[in-house]
Image (cartoon, rainbow, N blue to C red; front, side):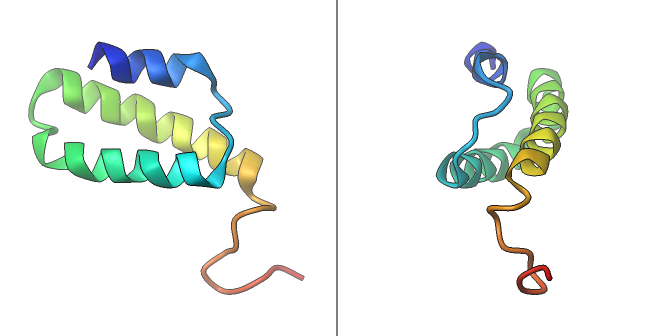
Length: 69
């Protein structure tokens, strides 16, 4: 989990769409293990960081409802 925390601390703007998608995959793999304290803590930090990152990428990632006007 230390590596995961280091990854989140490295760059709060881990800014490419590909990286965001890869991190989503990592989150999906960790989700079944969230009863383990360090994993749960990492997932909370991950979700906070992801929300911040998505705000930065909002104009680049298409919304599920289609393009914005």
